[in-house]
Image 1 (cartoon, rainbow, N blue to C red):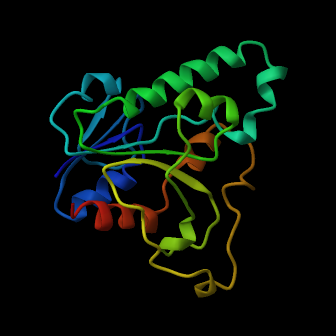
Image 2: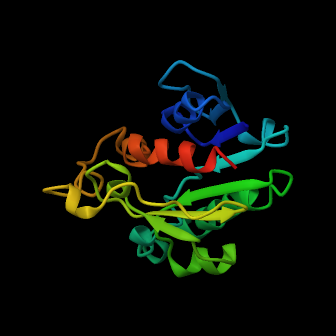
Length: 193
């Protein structure tokens, strides 16, 4: 399959698909942190090529439920939220790509009402062998629900790494990374369609 992993600089999801034999590319405004096929630039430059599968990770800063309070407390936040919705919808409207998965955490009601649908599924990293908690929503088109490969009882402790990460210059980037087991499940379960 030809796979575009949009808004990914880590290369984690891209490399999981490459490991399964697919032609996968990541795309982000930032350079890739791992060597591999990567387009550094605006995703619109490559979105309309011939892709079989799109996995998109649009920024959640202004869409996620954890930041909803800032809509009324920070000037300009509503406008940024509306831009975030439009960017999310760029992937939702990429109907030339038959299989699409758009990832974001739990969204606030203002974003959901403008996007027009809630996530198809929420998963946790521990479902796929990574002992962490991080509710990850998937808005799916043409793809089946992900199936867990592990049970919660497989772990003595589920870590809250994402939520307890201290402030810092790369916090957003680190929090947005996909855990390796989750990435592998994407490639194994969606790469066979």
